[in-house]
Image (cartoon, rainbow, N blue to C red; front, side, top):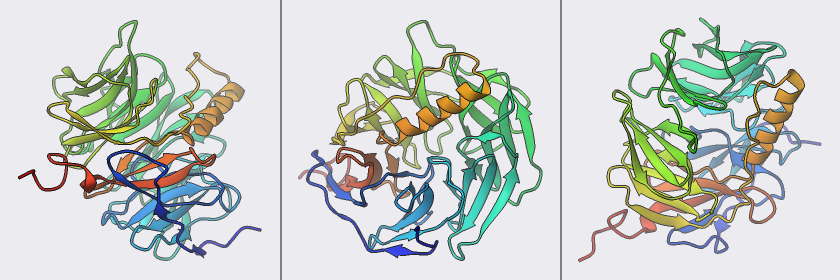
Length: 363
């Protein structure tokens, strides 16, 4: 029998000598079950609480972990939460997430859950948030698109699109713009919040594959992995692309200032790195040792059954990927590793790294 929401687990954190590297790493969870960061934006604004998803109590639900004492509290109960779809509101109290064909909200202060939007049997992907605007990739029947509206449940629309959207983000400075990641190629597009002005940002060459683009902090530029073997930056206005570093970058994440990029690596897995967003100089952080399963390749227009199978396989693979995320102050990185057999949460202290990355300059 599962525990009621509000249940608090004793701290499970401790040193993680099994994760080698220059940075000191602390393990945050230890139960023999699956844990992962709940989405891209998973810390409260003060950086004292980490929101994660776990099936420690049966079906996947949302939990919060207080970094100061390591205690863990259950936030949701009932129907399963779709993993990797949550986003923390800028006020810190509300967390938005997906259940089935609905977007829900839970208040951390009261644990009250409420439905923001319901589309019945539709499929919904990871939530994106800007101010009080909320959006998510969607599929209704055979029609792909996205849903967008206000966090109070008003002004919601379904915007039809020609292909499956796997992820999206609001522009950090101009909230009327969205960056869209389509399945297949070309991948990177942008569109206005009202559905106007859909345009391709970059057309990949025959040997290129773009992965996991995200905004570079508050600069308004984009950063993304380019296979083979590159971490790249795109100017939002000119669309000029520059290679920052040539290595097997995989899931980039930026600090809020857009000065540093953290990314895990794959094929080959060389661990997690920090990359200077101006010079491309990189610094090793640690070696998570995750199994790094890859998402299934896109194989054209699927029927409804094939589409659900693909989504399930993508979610299963995500549990095995580190996907680092900065704390709001940029001084630590949360990530996941299944090196023990179960995906566990870890925190790498970046202040341990030598200057000029962190710490006092050498005398």
